[in-house]
Amino acid sequence: MSPPAQRTFPSAAVKVRLLQDAVYSEDEELWPALLRHRPHIEHYFQEIGLELVVHEDDGFAYLKQAQQEEQAGMPRLFRRDKLTKGVAIIGVVLREQLLRFDEKIHDESRLILRMEDLVQLAAPFFSATNDEIRTDKRIEGAIRKAEEMGLLRRLPGAEGEERFEVRRILKARFPVETLKELREQLQAHVNAHDQQ
Image 1: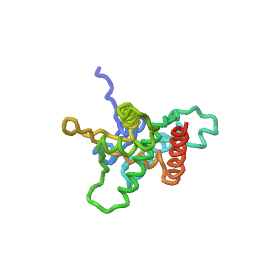
Image 2 (image 1 turned 90 degrees about the horizontal axis):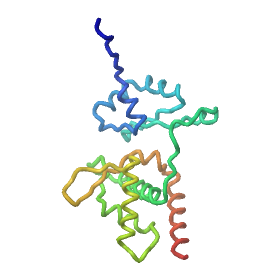
Image 3 (image 1 turned 180 degrees about the horizontal axis):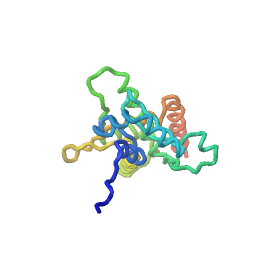
């Protein structure tokens, strides 16, 4: 007697990816499946207290803990990532760059930045030290952490030229309404540290 055939669901790969990370429109198989099976996927995750958030215009989708579930005593499935100051700086800088990029009319759909540009953009928010190399290493460490969190995606390139795509999930992690406040807090922190 042969074993029973394994039944696979067309949305299974989408569900697994959503539990790991965001799904993007360039995910050629996952994105169409997500849109096609969206009501089923939403219902599936609602049962365990998660909400599917889809930004079709920006081409990304992710899961977040449903607020009512938090109050109802449901244990948290996702831990809240407490951003380090360095990653918060990188996030704010990237979100501002994405905002400027989206305001301009151009043929590009993705914002691509070089490592050197990211370091230069973030440097004013890192406390000044006499050791420029040490400061650059701290900034590069924060950039790597932002990459691990899915805010950036490293692109293949020539030797010695690191380039990153700025991921649109930043719009969810750093909403434009809070951007000015976050920037002011970071600048105040830097100013206070520099005066010590």
